[in-house]
Image (cartoon, rainbow, N blue to C red; front, side, top):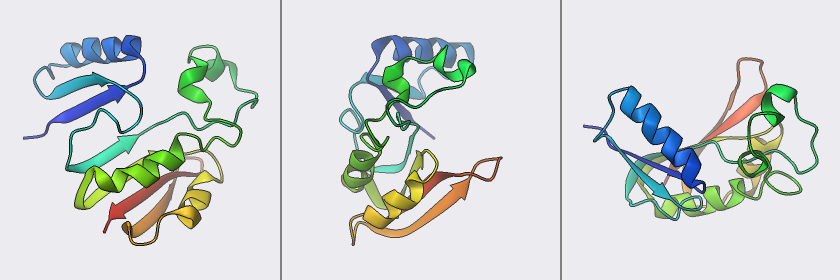
Length: 143
């Protein structure tokens, strides 16, 4: 009973996602839309999960990251928040009451986002760590 709306600004990335979905027998459970951030989503939704570009421009990357991922998928402006802030601000309009937003973030960003979140939009927020103990994920529940 689950339907997933997969979105990306890159048509090539979505084509690869389509191929992966087919290889895993998931045809019919996903739709794919090219677009920026929340624009292509049709709501109201129960959950939005995003791994947007969140690395600050000019950050040196490990070869296993920088050598394989395009900069468009990695860098989120001077402070890395260029995609994260609009996601946090716009998600309440796409979520059902009680729906969740889950964002992957860089070090220090989940707390900065939580402090700057719109009052009244979110009934709760949690910061979760990655396997290395780094605060990496912001989980927010729509009011």
